[in-house]
Amino acid sequence: MDTRSAGESQATMPRADLADTARRLKAILVGSSGNLVEWFDFYTYAAFSLYFAGSFFPAESQTAQLLQTTAIFAVGFLMRPIGGWLFGHFADRHGRRLALTVSVLLMCIGSLMIAVTPTYASVGVAAPLILLFARLVQGLSLGGEYGTSATYLSEMAHPEHRGFYSSFQYVTLIGGQLLAMLVLLVLQKLLLTPEQLEAWGWRIPFAIGAGLAIVVYFMRRDMHETEAFEEASATFDTRSSPLRGLLKHPREVAIVVGLTLGGTVAFYTYTIYMQKFLVNSAGFSKDTSTVIAAGTLFIFMCLQPLIGAISDRVGRRPVLLTFGILGTLLTVPILTALQEVRDAWSAFFLIMGALVIVSGYTAINAVVKAELFPTSIRAMGVGFPYAVTVALFGGSAQWVALYLKDIGHEQAFYWYVTGCILVSLMVYGLMRDTKTHSAMHRHV
Image 1 (cartoon, rainbow, N blue to C red):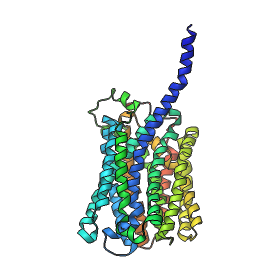
Image 2 (cartoon, rainbow, N blue to C red; image 1 turned 180 degrees about the horizontal axis):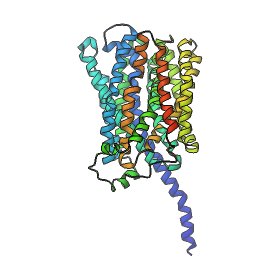
Image 3 (tube, one colour; image 1 turned 135 degrees about the horizontal axis):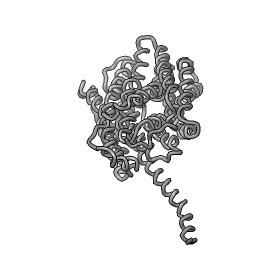
Protein backbone atom coordinates (compact mmCIF):
# COMPACT_ATOMS: atom_id res chain seq x y z
CA MET A 1 0.00 0.00 0.00
CA ASP A 2 1.25 3.49 -0.84
CA THR A 3 1.12 5.21 2.55
CA ARG A 4 2.08 8.55 1.03
CA SER A 5 -0.86 8.44 -1.37
CA ALA A 6 -3.23 7.45 1.44
CA GLY A 7 -1.99 10.30 3.59
CA GLU A 8 -2.32 12.79 0.78
CA SER A 9 -5.85 11.58 0.07
CA GLN A 10 -6.87 12.04 3.70
CA ALA A 11 -5.27 15.48 3.79
CA THR A 12 -7.01 16.68 0.66
CA MET A 13 -10.49 15.52 1.64
CA PRO A 14 -11.17 18.34 4.13
CA ARG A 15 -9.91 20.89 1.61
CA ALA A 16 -12.21 19.41 -1.03
CA ASP A 17 -15.15 19.59 1.35
CA LEU A 18 -14.24 23.15 2.29
CA ALA A 19 -13.96 24.16 -1.36
CA ASP A 20 -17.34 22.60 -2.12
CA THR A 21 -18.96 24.41 0.80
CA ALA A 22 -17.37 27.70 -0.27
CA ARG A 23 -18.62 27.19 -3.83
CA ARG A 24 -22.15 26.51 -2.60
CA LEU A 25 -22.12 29.50 -0.28
CA LYS A 26 -20.87 31.84 -3.00
CA ALA A 27 -23.54 30.61 -5.41
CA ILE A 28 -26.27 31.00 -2.80
CA LEU A 29 -25.13 34.52 -1.90
CA VAL A 30 -25.00 35.59 -5.55
CA GLY A 31 -28.29 33.88 -6.32
CA SER A 32 -30.08 35.46 -3.37
CA SER A 33 -28.53 38.94 -3.79
CA GLY A 34 -30.79 39.57 -6.76
CA ASN A 35 -33.76 38.64 -4.60
CA LEU A 36 -32.74 41.40 -2.17
CA VAL A 37 -32.53 43.99 -4.95
CA GLU A 38 -35.81 42.90 -6.55
CA TRP A 39 -37.64 43.14 -3.25
CA PHE A 40 -36.00 46.43 -2.40
CA ASP A 41 -37.36 47.82 -5.66
CA PHE A 42 -40.75 46.19 -5.21
CA TYR A 43 -41.19 47.13 -1.55
CA THR A 44 -40.02 50.69 -2.12
CA TYR A 45 -43.36 51.26 -3.81
CA ALA A 46 -45.25 50.18 -0.67
CA ALA A 47 -42.93 51.95 1.78
CA PHE A 48 -43.03 55.30 -0.05
CA SER A 49 -46.65 55.23 -1.21
CA LEU A 50 -47.61 57.37 1.79
CA TYR A 51 -45.54 60.13 0.17
CA PHE A 52 -46.15 59.78 -3.56
CA ALA A 53 -49.87 58.90 -3.57
CA GLY A 54 -50.75 62.57 -3.99
CA SER A 55 -48.34 62.94 -6.93
CA PHE A 56 -50.25 60.48 -9.11
CA PHE A 57 -53.88 60.88 -8.02
CA PRO A 58 -56.16 63.89 -7.50
CA ALA A 59 -56.45 65.20 -3.95
CA GLU A 60 -59.04 63.26 -1.95
CA SER A 61 -58.99 61.65 1.48
CA GLN A 62 -55.79 59.87 2.52
CA THR A 63 -57.59 56.52 2.54
CA ALA A 64 -58.89 57.09 -1.02
CA GLN A 65 -55.42 57.98 -2.32
CA LEU A 66 -53.87 54.95 -0.59
CA LEU A 67 -56.64 52.78 -2.00
CA GLN A 68 -55.74 53.89 -5.54
CA THR A 69 -52.00 53.34 -5.07
CA THR A 70 -52.57 49.92 -3.50
CA ALA A 71 -54.88 49.01 -6.40
CA ILE A 72 -51.92 49.56 -8.76
CA PHE A 73 -49.76 47.58 -6.32
CA ALA A 74 -52.26 44.71 -6.58
CA VAL A 75 -52.52 44.96 -10.39
CA GLY A 76 -48.74 44.59 -10.57
CA PHE A 77 -49.21 41.18 -8.98
CA LEU A 78 -51.35 40.06 -11.91
CA MET A 79 -48.16 39.93 -13.97
CA ARG A 80 -46.53 37.54 -11.53
CA PRO A 81 -48.24 34.40 -12.91
CA ILE A 82 -47.06 35.41 -16.40
CA GLY A 83 -43.56 35.93 -15.00
CA GLY A 84 -43.74 32.60 -13.17
CA TRP A 85 -44.77 30.82 -16.36
CA LEU A 86 -42.36 32.65 -18.70
CA PHE A 87 -39.27 32.46 -16.50
CA GLY A 88 -40.20 29.01 -15.21
CA HIS A 89 -40.22 27.70 -18.77
CA PHE A 90 -36.97 29.52 -19.51
CA ALA A 91 -35.23 28.27 -16.36
CA ASP A 92 -36.36 24.66 -16.86
CA ARG A 93 -35.21 24.57 -20.48
CA HIS A 94 -32.27 27.00 -20.68
CA GLY A 95 -30.92 27.14 -17.13
CA ARG A 96 -31.47 28.85 -13.80
CA ARG A 97 -28.55 31.26 -14.21
CA LEU A 98 -29.75 32.90 -17.42
CA ALA A 99 -33.32 33.28 -16.16
CA LEU A 100 -32.12 34.97 -12.95
CA THR A 101 -29.92 37.36 -14.95
CA VAL A 102 -32.78 38.51 -17.17
CA SER A 103 -35.25 38.90 -14.28
CA VAL A 104 -33.07 41.39 -12.37
CA LEU A 105 -32.52 43.44 -15.54
CA LEU A 106 -36.28 43.80 -15.95
CA MET A 107 -36.63 45.01 -12.38
CA CYS A 108 -34.03 47.69 -13.11
CA ILE A 109 -36.12 48.95 -16.04
CA GLY A 110 -39.31 49.13 -13.97
CA SER A 111 -37.67 50.99 -11.10
CA LEU A 112 -35.98 53.49 -13.40
CA MET A 113 -39.31 54.25 -15.06
CA ILE A 114 -40.94 55.09 -11.71
CA ALA A 115 -37.96 57.26 -10.71
CA VAL A 116 -38.46 59.54 -13.73
CA THR A 117 -42.26 59.40 -14.17
CA PRO A 118 -43.87 62.89 -14.22
CA THR A 119 -46.68 63.70 -11.79
CA TYR A 120 -50.43 63.96 -12.36
CA ALA A 121 -50.16 67.76 -12.17
CA SER A 122 -47.73 67.72 -15.11
CA VAL A 123 -49.20 65.16 -17.53
CA GLY A 124 -52.60 64.27 -16.11
CA VAL A 125 -53.87 60.72 -16.45
CA ALA A 126 -50.69 59.65 -18.26
CA ALA A 127 -48.84 59.71 -14.92
CA PRO A 128 -50.75 56.87 -13.23
CA LEU A 129 -50.74 54.96 -16.54
CA ILE A 130 -46.94 55.09 -16.72
CA LEU A 131 -46.81 54.09 -13.05
CA LEU A 132 -49.09 51.14 -13.83
CA PHE A 133 -46.92 50.00 -16.74
CA ALA A 134 -43.77 50.19 -14.62
CA ARG A 135 -45.45 48.09 -11.93
CA LEU A 136 -46.45 45.52 -14.54
CA VAL A 137 -42.80 45.23 -15.62
CA GLN A 138 -41.75 44.83 -11.98
CA GLY A 139 -44.47 42.23 -11.43
CA LEU A 140 -43.26 40.23 -14.43
CA SER A 141 -39.71 40.33 -13.08
CA LEU A 142 -40.65 39.35 -9.54
CA GLY A 143 -42.87 36.54 -10.77
CA GLY A 144 -39.89 35.07 -12.56
CA GLU A 145 -37.45 35.69 -9.71
CA TYR A 146 -39.27 33.75 -6.98
CA GLY A 147 -39.61 30.35 -8.60
CA THR A 148 -36.21 30.43 -10.26
CA SER A 149 -34.30 31.62 -7.19
CA ALA A 150 -36.11 29.14 -4.93
CA THR A 151 -35.18 26.37 -7.34
CA TYR A 152 -31.57 27.58 -7.63
CA LEU A 153 -31.03 27.85 -3.86
CA SER A 154 -32.61 24.45 -3.20
CA GLU A 155 -30.51 22.74 -5.87
CA MET A 156 -27.26 24.39 -4.75
CA ALA A 157 -27.78 23.58 -1.04
CA HIS A 158 -26.39 20.46 0.65
CA PRO A 159 -29.28 17.97 1.14
CA GLU A 160 -28.85 17.84 4.92
CA HIS A 161 -29.05 21.63 5.24
CA ARG A 162 -31.50 22.45 2.47
CA GLY A 163 -34.00 24.11 4.82
CA PHE A 164 -31.30 26.34 6.32
CA TYR A 165 -29.80 27.47 3.01
CA SER A 166 -33.14 27.89 1.26
CA SER A 167 -34.32 30.14 4.08
CA PHE A 168 -31.92 32.77 2.75
CA GLN A 169 -34.43 33.49 0.02
CA TYR A 170 -36.61 35.13 2.64
CA VAL A 171 -33.59 36.58 4.44
CA THR A 172 -32.81 38.55 1.29
CA LEU A 173 -36.48 39.13 0.51
CA ILE A 174 -37.04 40.67 3.95
CA GLY A 175 -33.63 42.33 3.68
CA GLY A 176 -34.85 44.11 0.57
CA GLN A 177 -37.91 45.31 2.44
CA LEU A 178 -35.77 46.39 5.38
CA LEU A 179 -33.32 48.23 3.13
CA ALA A 180 -36.23 50.17 1.62
CA MET A 181 -37.38 51.01 5.14
CA LEU A 182 -33.89 52.16 6.16
CA VAL A 183 -33.64 54.40 3.11
CA LEU A 184 -36.98 55.89 4.10
CA LEU A 185 -35.78 56.43 7.69
CA VAL A 186 -32.58 58.15 6.53
CA LEU A 187 -34.54 60.43 4.22
CA GLN A 188 -37.15 61.13 6.93
CA LYS A 189 -34.78 61.74 9.82
CA LEU A 190 -31.58 63.09 8.31
CA LEU A 191 -31.87 64.45 4.80
CA LEU A 192 -35.30 65.71 3.77
CA THR A 193 -38.34 67.44 5.18
CA PRO A 194 -41.80 65.84 4.79
CA GLU A 195 -42.58 68.42 2.11
CA GLN A 196 -39.45 67.51 0.15
CA LEU A 197 -40.23 63.81 0.43
CA GLU A 198 -43.70 64.33 -0.96
CA ALA A 199 -42.50 66.70 -3.70
CA TRP A 200 -39.53 64.73 -5.12
CA GLY A 201 -37.67 62.78 -2.42
CA TRP A 202 -39.71 59.62 -2.99
CA ARG A 203 -37.94 59.22 -6.36
CA ILE A 204 -34.53 58.63 -4.73
CA PRO A 205 -35.02 54.99 -3.63
CA PHE A 206 -36.31 53.96 -7.06
CA ALA A 207 -33.11 55.37 -8.61
CA ILE A 208 -31.02 53.54 -5.99
CA GLY A 209 -32.82 50.29 -6.77
CA ALA A 210 -32.18 50.62 -10.49
CA GLY A 211 -28.47 51.11 -9.82
CA LEU A 212 -28.26 48.11 -7.48
CA ALA A 213 -30.00 45.93 -10.07
CA ILE A 214 -27.29 46.74 -12.60
CA VAL A 215 -24.63 45.60 -10.08
CA VAL A 216 -26.42 42.29 -9.49
CA TYR A 217 -26.90 41.80 -13.22
CA PHE A 218 -23.13 41.73 -13.70
CA MET A 219 -22.69 39.46 -10.66
CA ARG A 220 -25.19 36.96 -12.01
CA ARG A 221 -23.60 36.76 -15.43
CA ASP A 222 -20.74 34.76 -13.88
CA MET A 223 -22.71 32.59 -11.44
CA HIS A 224 -22.54 28.77 -11.68
CA GLU A 225 -25.36 26.71 -13.13
CA THR A 226 -26.70 24.02 -10.78
CA GLU A 227 -25.44 20.47 -11.18
CA ALA A 228 -29.02 19.19 -10.96
CA PHE A 229 -30.03 21.13 -14.07
CA GLU A 230 -26.88 20.20 -15.99
CA GLU A 231 -27.43 16.52 -15.26
CA ALA A 232 -31.17 16.64 -15.94
CA SER A 233 -30.92 18.60 -19.19
CA ALA A 234 -29.28 15.57 -20.79
CA THR A 235 -32.22 13.33 -19.87
CA PHE A 236 -35.26 15.25 -21.14
CA ASP A 237 -36.36 16.88 -24.37
CA THR A 238 -35.58 20.61 -24.12
CA ARG A 239 -38.30 21.28 -26.69
CA SER A 240 -41.02 19.87 -24.41
CA SER A 241 -43.23 22.23 -22.40
CA PRO A 242 -42.68 22.39 -18.61
CA LEU A 243 -46.25 23.67 -18.25
CA ARG A 244 -47.57 20.55 -19.98
CA GLY A 245 -45.40 18.48 -17.68
CA LEU A 246 -46.76 20.37 -14.69
CA LEU A 247 -50.30 19.27 -15.56
CA LYS A 248 -49.19 15.71 -14.80
CA HIS A 249 -48.70 16.72 -11.16
CA PRO A 250 -52.11 18.12 -10.11
CA ARG A 251 -51.74 17.05 -6.47
CA GLU A 252 -48.44 18.87 -6.09
CA VAL A 253 -49.84 21.98 -7.78
CA ALA A 254 -52.83 21.95 -5.39
CA ILE A 255 -50.44 21.64 -2.43
CA VAL A 256 -48.46 24.68 -3.59
CA VAL A 257 -51.66 26.73 -3.88
CA GLY A 258 -52.97 25.55 -0.52
CA LEU A 259 -49.81 25.97 1.49
CA THR A 260 -49.20 29.43 -0.05
CA LEU A 261 -52.68 30.88 0.53
CA GLY A 262 -52.59 31.54 4.26
CA GLY A 263 -48.89 32.30 4.40
CA THR A 264 -48.91 34.93 1.68
CA VAL A 265 -51.94 36.76 3.10
CA ALA A 266 -50.38 36.78 6.58
CA PHE A 267 -47.00 37.86 5.23
CA TYR A 268 -48.37 40.83 3.27
CA THR A 269 -50.62 41.81 6.17
CA TYR A 270 -47.81 42.04 8.73
CA THR A 271 -45.11 43.46 6.44
CA ILE A 272 -46.42 45.38 3.41
CA TYR A 273 -49.70 46.59 4.94
CA MET A 274 -48.65 47.07 8.55
CA GLN A 275 -46.98 50.46 8.04
CA LYS A 276 -50.20 51.85 6.55
CA PHE A 277 -52.29 50.13 9.25
CA LEU A 278 -50.33 51.81 12.04
CA VAL A 279 -50.86 55.24 10.44
CA ASN A 280 -54.37 54.87 9.08
CA SER A 281 -56.02 52.74 11.77
CA ALA A 282 -53.94 52.92 14.96
CA GLY A 283 -53.14 56.63 14.63
CA PHE A 284 -49.32 56.53 14.73
CA SER A 285 -47.25 59.10 12.88
CA LYS A 286 -45.54 58.15 9.62
CA ASP A 287 -42.12 58.36 11.27
CA THR A 288 -43.09 56.15 14.23
CA SER A 289 -44.77 53.56 12.03
CA THR A 290 -41.63 53.35 9.88
CA VAL A 291 -39.40 52.77 12.93
CA ILE A 292 -41.71 50.06 14.27
CA ALA A 293 -41.93 48.34 10.89
CA ALA A 294 -38.15 48.47 10.39
CA GLY A 295 -37.43 47.00 13.83
CA THR A 296 -39.83 44.11 13.41
CA LEU A 297 -38.56 43.37 9.90
CA PHE A 298 -34.96 43.12 11.13
CA ILE A 299 -35.76 40.51 13.78
CA PHE A 300 -38.06 38.73 11.33
CA MET A 301 -35.17 38.50 8.86
CA CYS A 302 -32.84 37.03 11.49
CA LEU A 303 -35.38 34.36 12.40
CA GLN A 304 -35.46 32.77 8.95
CA PRO A 305 -32.23 30.68 9.08
CA LEU A 306 -33.11 29.49 12.60
CA ILE A 307 -36.52 28.21 11.52
CA GLY A 308 -35.00 26.73 8.35
CA ALA A 309 -32.41 24.85 10.43
CA ILE A 310 -35.14 23.58 12.76
CA SER A 311 -36.98 22.15 9.73
CA ASP A 312 -33.81 20.26 8.80
CA ARG A 313 -34.01 18.55 12.20
CA VAL A 314 -37.74 17.99 12.79
CA GLY A 315 -39.12 18.11 9.23
CA ARG A 316 -41.06 20.68 7.22
CA ARG A 317 -44.58 19.63 8.19
CA PRO A 318 -44.35 20.29 11.98
CA VAL A 319 -43.08 23.80 11.28
CA LEU A 320 -45.91 24.52 8.84
CA LEU A 321 -48.47 23.10 11.28
CA THR A 322 -47.18 25.42 14.01
CA PHE A 323 -47.76 28.43 11.77
CA GLY A 324 -51.21 27.19 10.73
CA ILE A 325 -52.48 26.49 14.25
CA LEU A 326 -51.13 29.65 15.91
CA GLY A 327 -52.10 31.81 12.94
CA THR A 328 -55.67 30.53 13.00
CA LEU A 329 -56.05 31.06 16.74
CA LEU A 330 -54.24 34.38 17.22
CA THR A 331 -54.75 36.52 14.09
CA VAL A 332 -57.99 38.17 15.21
CA PRO A 333 -56.74 38.91 18.77
CA ILE A 334 -53.45 40.36 17.47
CA LEU A 335 -55.01 42.62 14.83
CA THR A 336 -57.78 43.73 17.20
CA ALA A 337 -55.21 44.67 19.84
CA LEU A 338 -53.11 46.52 17.24
CA GLN A 339 -56.10 48.61 16.20
CA GLU A 340 -56.58 49.80 19.78
CA VAL A 341 -52.94 50.16 20.87
CA ARG A 342 -51.44 53.63 21.28
CA ASP A 343 -48.02 52.73 22.69
CA ALA A 344 -45.19 52.15 20.20
CA TRP A 345 -43.54 49.34 22.19
CA SER A 346 -46.84 47.50 22.55
CA ALA A 347 -47.37 47.74 18.80
CA PHE A 348 -43.81 46.49 18.22
CA PHE A 349 -44.26 43.38 20.37
CA LEU A 350 -47.67 42.56 18.90
CA ILE A 351 -46.34 42.73 15.33
CA MET A 352 -43.21 40.81 16.34
CA GLY A 353 -45.32 38.04 17.86
CA ALA A 354 -47.28 37.78 14.63
CA LEU A 355 -44.10 37.63 12.54
CA VAL A 356 -42.61 34.87 14.72
CA ILE A 357 -45.70 32.84 13.84
CA VAL A 358 -45.49 33.72 10.14
CA SER A 359 -41.83 32.58 10.10
CA GLY A 360 -43.13 29.02 10.22
CA TYR A 361 -44.28 29.61 6.65
CA THR A 362 -41.77 32.07 5.21
CA ALA A 363 -38.56 30.27 6.24
CA ILE A 364 -39.37 26.99 4.52
CA ASN A 365 -42.09 27.50 1.93
CA ALA A 366 -39.57 27.76 -0.93
CA VAL A 367 -37.80 24.51 -0.11
CA VAL A 368 -41.10 22.67 0.43
CA LYS A 369 -42.26 23.65 -3.05
CA ALA A 370 -38.92 22.73 -4.61
CA GLU A 371 -39.02 19.32 -2.94
CA LEU A 372 -42.39 18.59 -4.54
CA PHE A 373 -41.24 18.59 -8.19
CA PRO A 374 -38.63 16.84 -10.38
CA THR A 375 -35.83 18.91 -11.94
CA SER A 376 -37.35 19.14 -15.42
CA ILE A 377 -40.36 21.14 -14.19
CA ARG A 378 -39.14 22.42 -10.81
CA ALA A 379 -38.86 26.14 -11.59
CA MET A 380 -42.28 26.08 -13.27
CA GLY A 381 -43.80 24.02 -10.45
CA VAL A 382 -42.45 26.30 -7.75
CA GLY A 383 -43.06 29.61 -9.51
CA PHE A 384 -46.29 29.40 -11.51
CA PRO A 385 -48.91 28.11 -9.00
CA TYR A 386 -47.28 30.20 -6.28
CA ALA A 387 -47.48 33.33 -8.45
CA VAL A 388 -51.15 32.73 -9.26
CA THR A 389 -51.97 32.37 -5.56
CA VAL A 390 -49.97 35.46 -4.56
CA ALA A 391 -51.55 37.48 -7.38
CA LEU A 392 -55.05 36.62 -6.20
CA PHE A 393 -54.55 36.78 -2.43
CA GLY A 394 -51.17 38.26 -1.46
CA GLY A 395 -51.09 41.30 -3.71
CA SER A 396 -54.71 42.13 -2.95
CA ALA A 397 -54.41 41.78 0.85
CA GLN A 398 -53.81 45.43 1.68
CA TRP A 399 -56.37 46.53 -0.92
CA VAL A 400 -59.00 44.29 0.73
CA ALA A 401 -58.01 45.69 4.14
CA LEU A 402 -58.32 49.32 3.01
CA TYR A 403 -61.57 48.67 1.14
CA LEU A 404 -63.20 47.05 4.18
CA LYS A 405 -62.01 49.96 6.32
CA ASP A 406 -63.38 52.44 3.79
CA ILE A 407 -66.86 50.88 3.98
CA GLY A 408 -66.79 50.62 7.78
CA HIS A 409 -66.07 46.90 8.25
CA GLU A 410 -62.37 46.84 9.05
CA GLN A 411 -62.59 43.89 11.44
CA ALA A 412 -63.95 41.68 8.67
CA PHE A 413 -60.41 41.72 7.27
CA TYR A 414 -59.09 40.07 10.44
CA TRP A 415 -61.43 37.14 9.88
CA TYR A 416 -60.50 37.03 6.20
CA VAL A 417 -56.83 36.54 7.12
CA THR A 418 -57.81 33.88 9.67
CA GLY A 419 -59.90 32.00 7.11
CA CYS A 420 -57.04 31.93 4.60
CA ILE A 421 -54.64 30.53 7.23
CA LEU A 422 -57.21 27.91 8.21
CA VAL A 423 -57.41 26.65 4.62
CA SER A 424 -53.63 26.29 4.58
CA LEU A 425 -53.69 24.51 7.93
CA MET A 426 -55.94 21.84 6.43
CA VAL A 427 -53.43 21.37 3.60
CA TYR A 428 -50.54 21.06 6.06
CA GLY A 429 -52.49 18.42 7.96
CA LEU A 430 -53.04 16.30 4.84
CA MET A 431 -49.71 16.66 2.99
CA ARG A 432 -46.66 14.44 3.45
CA ASP A 433 -43.46 15.86 4.88
CA THR A 434 -41.37 16.84 1.87
CA LYS A 435 -38.12 16.45 3.81
CA THR A 436 -38.61 12.67 3.89
CA HIS A 437 -40.66 12.42 0.67
CA SER A 438 -38.59 14.66 -1.61
CA ALA A 439 -38.50 14.73 -5.41
CA MET A 440 -35.19 16.63 -5.46
CA HIS A 441 -33.33 13.53 -6.66
CA ARG A 442 -35.73 12.98 -9.59
CA HIS A 443 -34.98 14.60 -12.94
CA VAL A 444 -38.26 13.79 -14.77
